[in-house]
Length: 545
Image 1 (tube, rainbow, N blue to C red):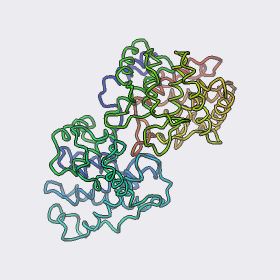
Image 2: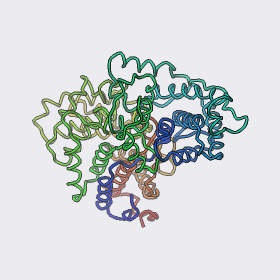
Image 3: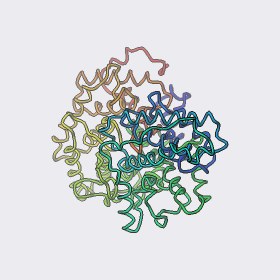
Image 4: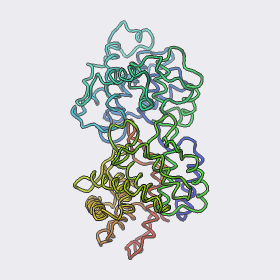
């Protein structure tokens, strides 16, 4: 958020954030090392490669790995970076400075060492298509290592690697991955006669095994992914189309030559920002904009999070919910196609379920029934089944896990909010008990500085934890103390717009505007919460002055 509105009232800050999101045609996410490295490898013809190579080299961590988060999350981005560096060294170019060649060779050495030092058994995160992307990249690296080691390789006739440099032995595939899976998945869909939209976003993992006749030919990003788009162009029988080049160049221009994992993310960003701000009250000045967003996004056939992706229950539910919040007559009928009898599949052909998508569906159904009481006969039984399904997914300690986020605080906050608001008349005690268990876990896991976080305290996770405590049926003294400490922490966090990456796509990412909306709304809810509070006696922080 801009520093010019940090000290403004909530309504002004919220209106400023909505206007900022409305003016951004791409969405506020940082470049992805994984995605940028895939473009380096597959699209040497794309202008701006020297800048991307510099980005790759500058992003390597002191331990030799690439990426954000704990080491297990660094497996895929490090594989991507090492493969890209090897690809650049192999193809060579007379224009590449010798110093860049030396740095790439050193980066490969350090990256391979970091990969070999990873715990071979994992466990590995449940990120998008990791089971295909990891073995695919290991295979590519192992194909390239012998070529680098071959003195007769073409690389030595272009941009010589440093004398006597060799990248060492080939990599061992980490435990839990199947080296045959990329080819198997490709053949499975080849025999079916088409490539499902489900695989477009991660197409780079199977590109080498897909017949050219099945590769989608379109002038925009394939599956909203620069990596998938570059892989499609690399496997095409002719040079990249003007539309493909223009699509990649447009994204590169927005991200200073690099690439995010999905572009644009307007649907996801606008729906989540609107829902977050609505918790503390959407400012009147922003209502016309949010209504326009909801009207444009809602689709009776289902909503997709970005162009080229599958329609999914999560974005569809949020479109229904936001429409209800701003008074638009959009019903929950588009969710019907995702219902499987007890809950909602996030998308057709889903492998693992999502509790947050179902929590959003419960909120959407509940909000619709409150606005339209006559629909309770239709949606009431489904709401009750959904409530029971969510309660049954809670872990004994009180948390809910989810595949879209690395932190349990996100999913737990979503489930608590849904169950608290729409637990239903029948089974309400069951839902209340689940909320109580989640509240107790939240109190117990607060950090000494007043924050919460799965790997370290963050403003985003603290906002989710505060939401959980604000949902408590009984506001006990320990809840008040925890919320006071959370408020002090959030008011002291630098408002620079940079948040740790906790969201799952192919690797970790951080949707900046959405996180800002969550933090902003919770700060307002904490400031205006009823009852006595110690916060009135605290000294204002620099962020509040």
